Image (cartoon, rainbow, N blue to C red):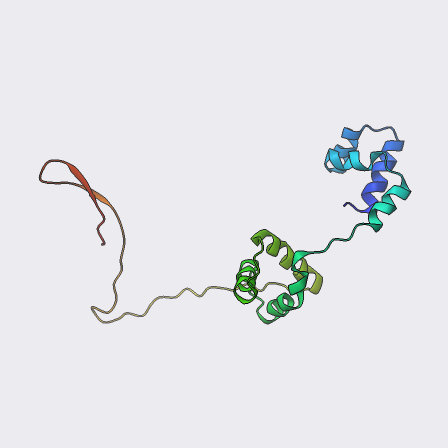
Length: 154
């Protein structure tokens, strides 16, 4: 549900004689939102707000997720989702967990610190202790003149 400022802007533009599609374009919102608030009175708007209480699915795990995010600042939302599945057998959509983690990070100022990768040269090892493997495919002719695909390891 949009805030009171959007509702009041829609009503002001309506009073100025704008059409619904012009109001939607002017405010940069969907025309369905304009249509919902177009004929709504202030009392109806306030009544719709009083009945609006969103219960989030992950509120049961809120304290645990906050603790994880504060202990491990590089933790991603996907990892939180995996941990919930492992520790609590709770199965939620990854997108749901991502949105919830994002809201918690904003609410509690738990910024995700970058996890820089360190790239460095591998020290030289003696002959025979290290190998580089590259996979590929090659078409060869067999003795009958047909073709056969082989997968060499180079």
